[in-house]
Length: 299
Ligand code: PMP
Image 1 (cartoon, rainbow, N blue to C red):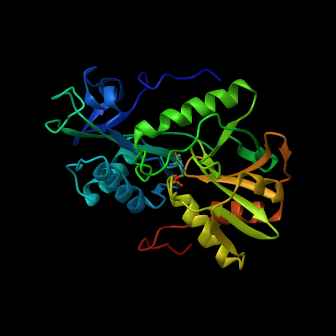
Image 2 (cartoon, rainbow, N blue to C red):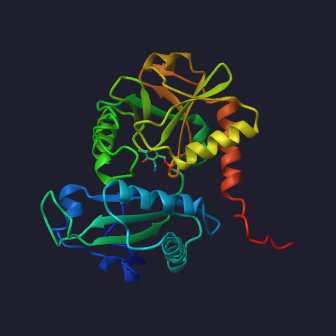
């Protein structure tokens, strides 16, 4: 399928409080965000017209900016409303939503105290990449790069700069014929994939790394709650790389990835089975449930 460039599409982008035609949503090349990665973003999904866990994403966006030392000049209520309006304005109901905040061009040096903070929101159709074939699972390589110590980088922020090691790791994995990379942390323990968190099924229990050096994903927390509802024991712990060999099932979770089974990590093979399938289906059902407070009209 031909790639439609992201700067040459029809539609509307919310930019600093107003809708601008998609192709006009431009910024100056001397923007601080571009040179020094002083940007934070979110990835959200709308299902049947509702953005799943919108407020949690908005709060994380605001907090990501604070971790990088800036305050987004919009309230959570305003950002929520802008995300919803962007979806509606583009006539989409099932789509990915991407808010992005960054430092402007007022100052171009390591110090950026005088920069203005910008906010943009775009949305586009982005169906799950694996569709009906999802239970077959994806293939992961071990990443070349390690997740840094939380005192080395602001790892709790969804900061654009942190995706540098993600892109390098993903490109390396793709060059070797894999779908994605599984990253270790600086100690050599299992961390996450380049854009999704990871779960292992060991002896019927669900094991996932403690989020000390990576994003405590909203999908991750949702899937943990779904597992507990199913009486599946959830264990958050440091997971040494060698423990992967003990896993009977492995899967990734994230807003874009949803629940994605894994069938291979380097030379280890897995067969996605009952626990993965149950949680995948439970997640699919949950995201399509009307949010609280929205009346469901009787037929
Ligand atoms: N880790 C990384 C590096 C990510 O980019 C994402 C996607 N935002 C996640 C984990 C999963 O987070 P969430 O479930 O909140 O989308």
